Length: 190
Image 1 (cartoon, helix red, strand yellow):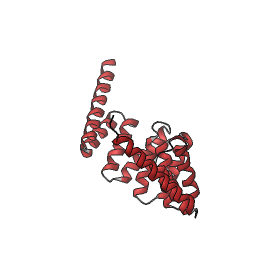
Image 2 (image 1 turned 60 degrees about the horizontal axis):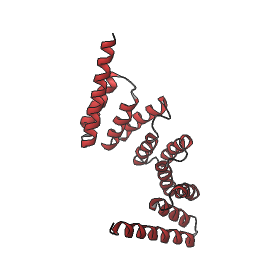
Image 3 (image 1 turned 180 degrees about the vertical axis):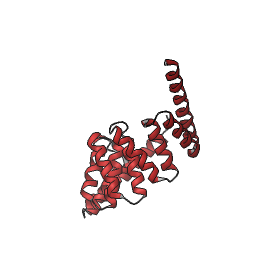
Image 4 (image 1 turned 120 degrees about the horizontal axis):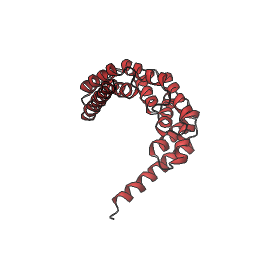
């Protein structure tokens, strides 16, 4: 019996690796086939569900991606923090901005300082005109990374949305200044 189990493990590992290779090559159709085979070998295998969901998302099959991502979150909410950002992207593409924000809220309740989720939620909050929450998310990113250009621009956009035009202008100016300094630093000979 151990030989059979070892054989299935080897087959499962090989199938998942082939799928990942196809993902890296951009052949999402073939990758999806490999992840489906992996799920046939081990139903509910979380790594295969995440990867297949990513492939579905890349192929524009948002509903299928959402099913895989929801399955992962249901089975193990803390398995992969990126799953929440992928789910929110999928929901955003289908026009469900508030659903996308709810998934990011869940993510941030588990992973409070996860910058991609903070940035994504901030951007979505700008779209739904929740400028106060957007401002809070972008400020949180800037506390750890003061020269983060996307967060700086998002903070300025949220301030503009709140009607604080002078402070918004200061933040836009600081973003331009930070970017100029970074570019000059990159151009300096070593």
